[in-house]
Image 1 (spheres, helix red, strand yellow):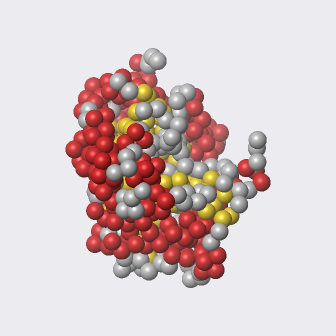
Image 2 (cartoon, rainbow, N blue to C red; image 1 turned 45 degrees about the horizontal axis):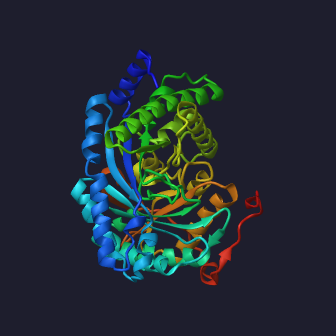
Image 3 (cartoon, rainbow, N blue to C red; image 1 turned 90 degrees about the vertical axis):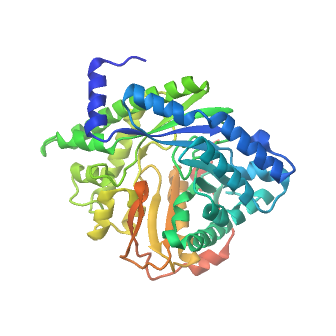
Length: 454
């Protein structure tokens, strides 16, 4: 791969003036060979293998950032779903494994470790049940561990029994971390059609089709796209706007692949994918909402927002696909409400509601992300919100996710400060009406007709 002088200069401008960064280098580690009938032995093997393979990740990432002048914001680990690793032990309490993961992450200095995870879209194994029961305490007693569960796929449908149980454990996690505004729930996400090479937390985990170790890179760049659009005049038509976004995404992706391949070379491992996702931060100018407004809506959430977001997401994907044959992960545009200052402003102005956010998730990269709701929200209401979002992913054969945070002691319109990349959230009103019967019925929503493609 070669880069022209012009591309290098454009990239330097993006880094210095437009907040372009490599959001994460995520090392995936296969832990299946750590399984042991004795849980304590499993924990020891998990800790040792993570430290062995991950000990150089931070040093390598920092050296690449220094050599190329591209900020690498986060260094993360993703591991095999722990419910699989723990199955041989028969243990009913998997919190010790979460502690082992957390200790290993602290030892090697990474920001987060993902993979306290399970796939339950058609039912629970014994170890899946153990993992579910362990999630609230695991997220209370660890700092870096992230948990995720797959509740449905287009091929399998939605496991509504699992959705109902998940809603209860979200509330329990919020209660256990009430002193930090329910922050434990920021490290917990559920999926429809999970992506197994996702480098972004809280959903990062090591899929079963991945190699022994692999480097996956997540690149962000809302500021670069925003800057490119600001240079266009108001008379520029939408096709030209689309092409501008696509060309910018192309350049962002090239940066990500360069970093990923170099990281894999220095660590003597495999390069996996570059996830080119416009992932915002609370920093001014690093906002998806700002981009939507530059495309042509007065405020994010106004009529036309979903169409603008669909165009943005598709242009990012096409630009990334042009730049790299290794584009993967989620790739597109993220809309984490608390992490995007423009989204926060739109909620405060009354332009962006929970219902409009749900509509937008039909065309974005993920789904309802970092959405705060009142602490007294019922499990039935959470079940309804989650099931709605999973259904969007199921019938559209796309990945959708829910990272929802019931904030203890807070009501609609109140604010909660989490700080850092997690930002500020305005508590959203989930509505006055319930779906208690849907929540209590249980069972499974079958796969849609379009899933039969064999």
